[in-house]
Amino acid sequence: MGTYLRIALMIVSLVLTGLVILQAKGGSLGGMFGGDGSIYQTRRGVEKSVFSMTVVFAVVFLTLAIFTVGR
Picture 1 (cartoon, rainbow, N blue to C red):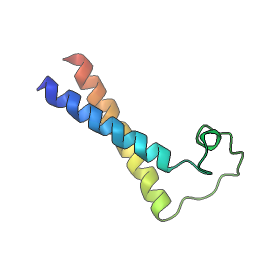
Picture 2 (cartoon, helix red, strand yellow; picture 1 turned 30 degrees about the vertical axis):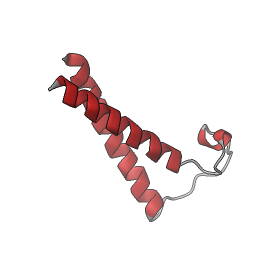
Picture 3 (cartoon, rainbow, N blue to C red; picture 1 turned 60 degrees about the vertical axis):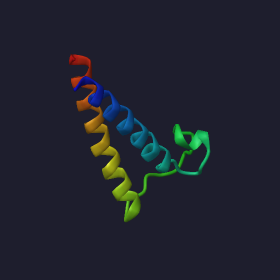
Picture 4 (cartoon, rainbow, N blue to C red; picture 1 turned 180 degrees about the vertical axis):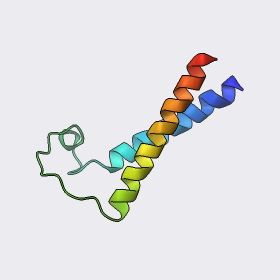
């Protein structure tokens, strides 16, 4: 069971990384880490869906990490 948790954790971490990169504005490394300097805008459509999926995958990642460490 521990092996399956580790594999799931790796898959979720890759998906979560991809979702975070998709959210980067401007396409540069500075934009990804807050160097963009843009004003907050309301998320709509696909952008809102990607944000929601990021939150869900972050919670799943945290849960899997806790269970994996416990084993």
